[in-house]
Length: 119
Image 1 (cartoon, helix red, strand yellow):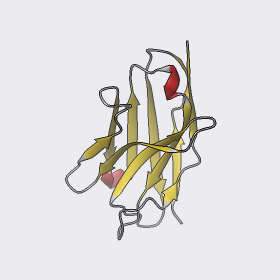
Image 2 (cartoon, rainbow, N blue to C red):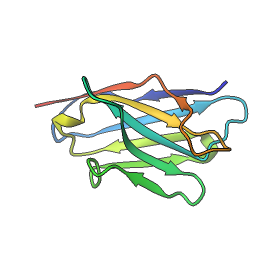
Image 3 (cartoon, rainbow, N blue to C red):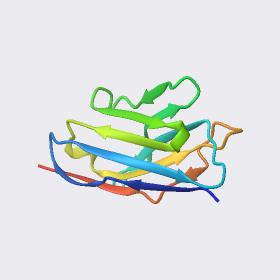
């Protein structure tokens, strides 16, 4: 059974930085890609960033481009999200997600970690 565990959330002032981590565990876990999503109060969950293991290509949502950077280690099934220049509107629960090896569709999800940006 695959488990994703996030860490690194917390309270930070606007303009500050946080680094989220996500580790996937499970027998012989493999994936095509891993990503980060977020959900703010009263809003739908939205895509933040993803990394595709083959080739290492990354994608970032327009709202975070230039401020957030996704990275990871396929061999360790670990993905990170470096968040700089945080804004109030970045406040949300951040979720780590992973695809199975056979289909580019996010199937596995973590429990989420709270990020709160204060003024």
